[in-house]
Length: 148
Figure 1 (cartoon, helix red, strand yellow):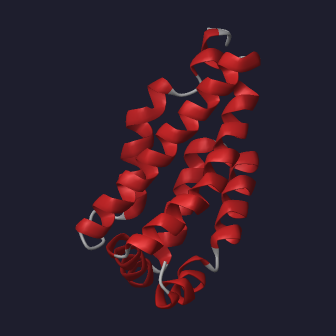
Figure 2 (figure 1 turned 180 degrees about the horizontal axis):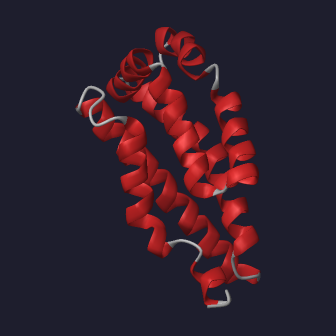
């Protein structure tokens, strides 16, 4: 990262901890689909700002790399969430990490489509589609043990 990009990174990621904390609170309070929707609605509220911000992050390799580093916080949060619902032991931990990675990839994919479409469809719509597409693969272990 050159000195200019190093100076820009805090500007683009100053609210990262707040976003992760908000997602964690939503997960605890309302569950996964609603937590994803809450995050999408938050970004949609300031659409022009977030579209420009995400466009710039995607255009700058150093900012993309920094975002990838920070995404580990989301992965840890989501893996812990899925771990609470999954199988115990090493296999359960692996599955929870895979579920976290899949969900984060789906959310990032929805964001990319949102940026490419210049805000259309709205991000909550794209996130709902992404989560709905992925939903059958999530919580597999827990679903096998739910009463029918």
